[in-house]
Length: 212
Image 1 (tube, one colour):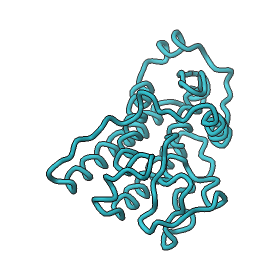
Image 2 (tube, rainbow, N blue to C red; image 1 turned 180 degrees about the vertical axis):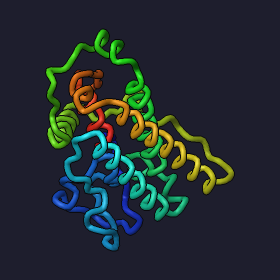
Image 3 (cartoon, one colour; image 1 turned 90 degrees about the horizontal axis):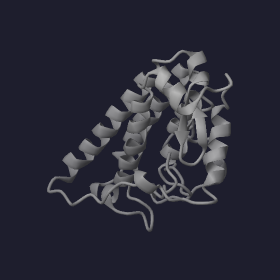
Image 4 (cartoon, helix red, strand yellow; image 1 turned 30 degrees about the vertical axis):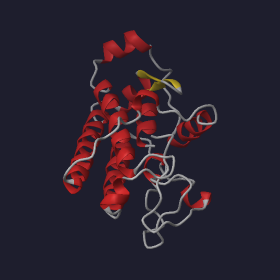
């Protein structure tokens, strides 16, 4: 998820908050902007995934839709900052940078997680509650900290660079989906990981955040 999304749509259209109210923040791609009118109205709307298979499917669906929209930008627009916000390219790089370490953490042995972060009470908050908690945290700070993308030098082949950025992001997402699927439903509620904004989360809650 990202706190600095500021993409403008390929058509430059504005948005209504209602249209994006239930849309995954990391895939709105233009926080405060509108999806192009020719795109399906349900694009990036993933509902409220909860079970492991639903969370993995949501990530894969959002990846496919995000890739489609990313390729609608001209190469110049894809790499250009959107006002004071990141470029679409930097947004994708940020999403990869946040997803990959979470995927790796999901591969840690259960005993390591229990020793390091304790055990949950056996229940997890649903996706929409994690979404709302994260949104509330943005009123205090919007900095992405160490998860902000580093400056990306100009490259002689922007088309190849765009595909490399998208492919690296796809790899991180596939690893995430596979990592979530390693755990039983009970284990997703039992084991925990730390989040820099939201405190200690169950694995299910961390997966929900990652999808968001």
